[in-house]
Length: 335
Ligand code: KG4
Ligand code: ZN
Image (cartoon, rainbow, N blue to C red; front, top):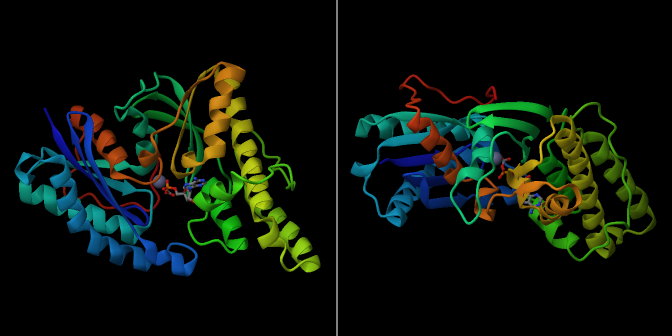
């Protein structure tokens, strides 16, 4: 029997979850809308808002799960990677909480947790080891070979921008507010994905690059806007559909190559961009096309959330894999 309280504060979402014997019984997420005014996350503002949000989020998570502080057996927290000031709020809170309650502390790597979100009990069976996971978020784009809960190997990753950044930076060019990924997704649903073509990166092995692709979008927009100042507004749906189609193609090509190379047919996606409908559909289409067994986390466990930290913490708790009070956050954390 175990009750774990988990805290996620790596970027701009303050989230607290409770894991009761491997089941997530609450997953509170306090989003920070303040960054919309700046077109991206402002680190200093993010840490201040985490400080404001963390205590109410803890109370709400406990209340929703129907547990009291005294019943908690361990505190799990995101140690990194992420924004240092944001991480510092969650890590300091977790350490004080564990010290006050005299319970163990469990350190979790945010990128492992995105993948382990697949083990949050739900309607479907989780993947079996080994499986491949494409983890796509605002800061990372990785293809990971997962051999066990904590035996994972990155077999391909981005050399520059992450897929989420490609979405967000394109959105900025289109005057859409931050984070632009979900908005591009929305407009793409009613656009023509073949309307515009962009430069496809030619990168070796299983790695990715999105910087040249982004520049090619910028040049295309400049060319058309010079001829028609209303080009973006008049073609928004088609631009979004074409950009999304291209990003999904780039991601899926490498994922298919990886699946062939490792002879693996259990393929998952994770991270914020796994909420994208184009990517979800493309992955699912490979069930028919290539005989893949595909795995997509439920919506609330795709973008940053403490539920995934809680499940990762639960598996570490079972191994008694604890850290002491000397632990500190790591903006860059080894995988
Ligand atoms: O995993 P996440 O919540 O935070 C990081 O760890 O970075 O990912 C956030 C990223 C943002 O770039 C956001 O635009 C993107 O995920 N995202 C999407 C969608 N929902 C979130 N991108 C495309 N389509 C979506 N539906
Ligand atoms: Zn994330």
